[in-house]
Length: 511
Image 1 (cartoon, one colour):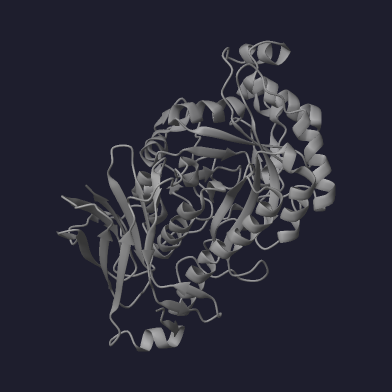
Image 2 (tube, rainbow, N blue to C red; image 1 turned 60 degrees about the vertical axis):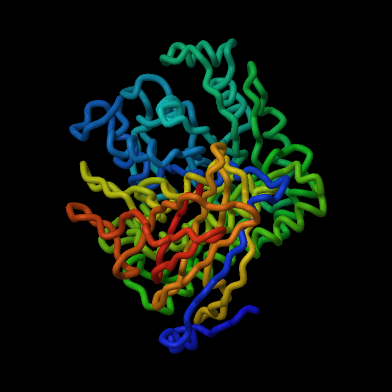
């Protein structure tokens, strides 16, 4: 039986209510989906200091680099096992003309980034720099093509330039230093075409999409996975129209969902927030589950075989920028609250991969809910980075269903969320991984894991927590939020028992 507590009641009863959860992990369940690694995807836009300083400093920089890519960020991303990286936008994509970013860097035209702070960019990071980065990281590139201000011919030639092994575009690519074509799987045909990508209606865009998609050709043995621009948040009509009109022409349909207080006025501070604001943020983030299910239902009505995937290619928290920074750069700090959002969200995404095939958090460096922050030559890893690194054990693992009963928390805004979160999977070696999150600020949760037939022999894990929920990692200081070994899980017969501290994330490996 579920217990539902209002926000005030949940706090006032903290001293008398002991949170306990029993989880039945059905490791013998058959025909379970594999969790695509792309669920743990990243997003890199020409926005603020994401590309320039964040990823790219140029080969002549005093900041240590490998062929222009800053060494510390490169190594951090390798450890993260980034499966897919989306580029160049975002809103920037629909003003980006790819031919400005090829050839000798000193000859490339400069660009005013009208979307994000009117920053002057020199185009020194272009197609070669991005695709070479993906090769260095072992990452699948996800290219967002310009539909808003571009042409069909421009997009078609870009695809040819990247993937053809013969012809004039291949010759141009070789002239610019790359003989072999790249492998490019994911092609987004426009971005937010309902807004910054063209202010289109879904009826109009569906026709535009089909036209552009037609001319996105496959060259050599490269097979494009074509992604149509999908809805924002709760716009179910956009999904309906796209499925009605263009489902036969797409492999995937995108969706954007941000945990944001609102699009007008203050979005709230990333680091200074009340208990009420903490629970409001978490409750808004997990509302993505209902949003996903409603979009899935529409897609199922037109595509019961689930041939078309849903790609949540922008998600994450969005707060006010840090004081004193360019408002157009969307630079925000990243606290343990953001880590909780990441953990709760990823546990949800793992459940729905029969239709959800990719998710790309916004963004990878220095923008919104980022993995990494830089300040000149300095770098810190954020709490969200640590969640993604801990959770990468779920990539390409077989989903294992878990059954449990929880209580509920009702936020001050009236949103309802479960007071516990868990996800489990089995990797190729047979090891079982269980990720757990306790969102309560004021009490621990006692957890008992039981299994269908597994008799655990060993259990190990990591925990991420902080002494305060608003802690974050600062430049030049010891990290306030970093993972540690978790030693409180105990094996007893066919069960594993543990206690999760308040506001903590734990990932276990059970053998």
